[in-house]
Image 1 (cartoon, rainbow, N blue to C red):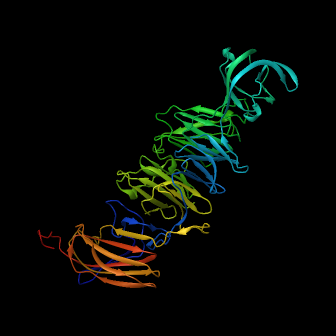
Image 2 (cartoon, rainbow, N blue to C red; image 1 turned 135 degrees about the vertical axis):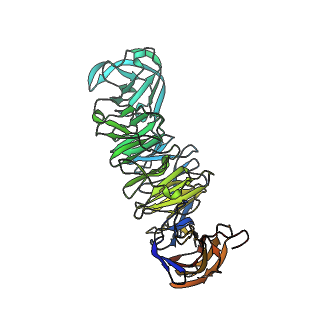
Image 3 (tube, helix red, strand yellow; image 1 turned 180 degrees about the vertical axis):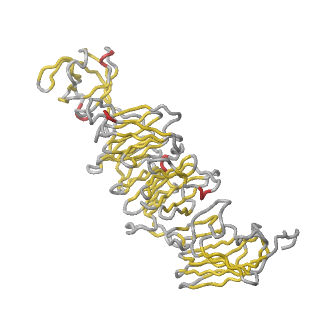
Length: 530
């Protein structure tokens, strides 16, 4: 209990006062005055006990499939991709992952892009199939043997660019089936280095520029990085379209396998390195070009499968959900920050950050979702409500998209989004852990004193429960327009412990809590006797 030590009078009356109110502590080891359960509380007023500020509803989606923030908000509603509220493309009806590289915004698993400058939307992959010929041609203005693919009316320039790596399939000569880099495009001709092919006519070919099937994606040092299974991939430098360019240059793409058990579960950029996670391993890629890239791994708590969206940086620390609960990672040995949850295990986490606080929406063992907030300044958890988040994004304020449809802006926004509507007065609740007054003896409850401030229109009810009998007894219902203390008498009752619950609506603040009790004997009461 954070406050003043208990005072024991000569009459045996014990009084304790609490002036600092911590966070969520849903553990059997919770002490007097700690919060066992809560609804919509916040650390904004710490050390005072306060509810969170009302959120702002900035929009609503019919089928939320993803949210991302960069220069503006991007989301997927059903099969529609939206940039700043305007539909820009069509995608599959599934949950999305986002990453950005320069002007390009990338969406998985569709392998599509959106150019934020030109507003162009399209596929990262390209292909052509038809009848073509392998011929002699020219390169850099000089004659060259076996370097040209000719196809009348192929419109190569509309599909590919010089520097693209393409995969050729269907040729009768096996050596012509290969992945190779286009050097020049001229009309109906694709030109490559000399002696790339064996000349042949009337070939039924497929020419394609492919992107690996990636489970997870991030950006680091002007490259896209991704992973699937046991393999790490990197795109060509500054080019999200090419993943198979291996020219011996510093701008090449990159791929490497790792040998640990299990598949990758997430990836992100942190402290200047691309980081890849399995449930029991963390890998970092060092180096600045493919020739000196090194994949270094450690057997550490990684991201739990299904919680790849839980990764977020708050207070310069990376947080995510691991098998051991919510975990903090500073680039060394991960450490759990999940003691406050006791024995409750969570899964399917989605996380976000406003830079100081880590927000995570996750489901418990009964698949009920909870939105928790970890304040990195104080090391405190607070539970807000049962919101199931699809994604978070920072765009001058923290936005989060609910699986139920609403797009919310956090109550701490410096500027209210245009057209946003406040959710109104917030219902809140604080249930304290058992008050034992530091004694295992039976005690007689005496009186309760609260120093509390309520804003206009707010209300706060106080209930008490004895010896975990499941019955909440109303002590009083408070209303006030200015800061003041309330003295709340309690019908004396001999008990081993008691619990206190505050239920409010609107904004209120508790500055201090005092409780008095009279010491009793260590004898247990007989059945039917208090």
